[in-house]
Length: 409
Image (cartoon, rainbow, N blue to C red; front, top):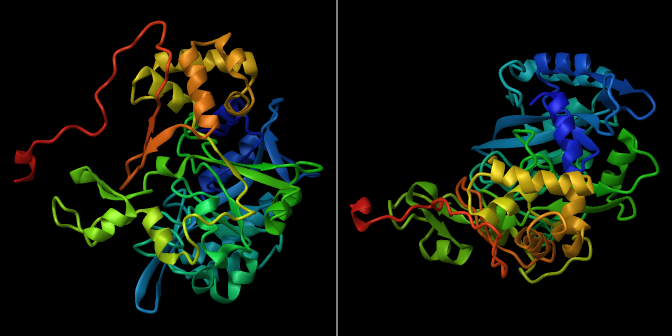
């Protein structure tokens, strides 16, 4: 997960701007200084002595744990800053609240309003917003340690919050069911923990700017301007690891309606279920699931590697059988996003077998189905493809194994 590898695979994916991650960690900040060169006219960064088109923005994620009205709240936040001087200032201000060397995403013993106050104290161009807003743990609306409103979380510092990160398990349409969120921009980021193309850029923001600069990016988001902030790229929220309510150990996955029937108790082990994002949205929403908001600007896609893996019948996107057609498409058309959004069926079939092209088109057109993820288990892409592969490959065992009644007694 070096900066060089991030830039390499970001280019393959079709990204031209990525976050550095972890600038709060002294060793990683040292690596940033060593590996990246600041562009003074854009307040972005590029790899030193390379000609890659990928640029970096200084970014980190932090965790605040604090008590609010007798309950413990655990919230993750994303922080953006324009230059190394302001990064140093933020680190200096956050040091009294926790050990910044302990983790790339440090745990801070301060409230969310305190965090915002410290981040915004030295530079009004810094930006902060809640990360993966709906995941059950460590999020602003999380079922286990979150809040019901942005204002409850950030209090008098809410004036500095202009955006929310939707996370993999929700999308803008779900978030727009809450009228109180209408004033916030909805950003989507991959929150990747590896550089592989099925992790980096799973979700992204598409902007149309006069120049790619820190201020142009952050102001387009803050203003939620549809002329500059065009749309987000979202995975199907069912693909996310916490979309439905469930219990991984018992292979139990339930829709909100079903979970409520069981009183959110696992029907197998009788323990409390992990409440999914869809159910949590239902709880807080003041608009029906059929509500259509004119500001829900997004496209649903899935990683090309995952699409190919589903056609081949493997659970792993990291095998050669997946990389071969993937690389053929990238070499022909330039990057993954171009393949996913723009290349025609006919052009794809000049490079790879028809089932791969058919699957990409189905995902692009919203015709693919995803078995919802739950309790840390990713959703599974389900594709009905008419044309068999020219060389059929055996299917690997499914992720969820069959269980006998004796397993439960």
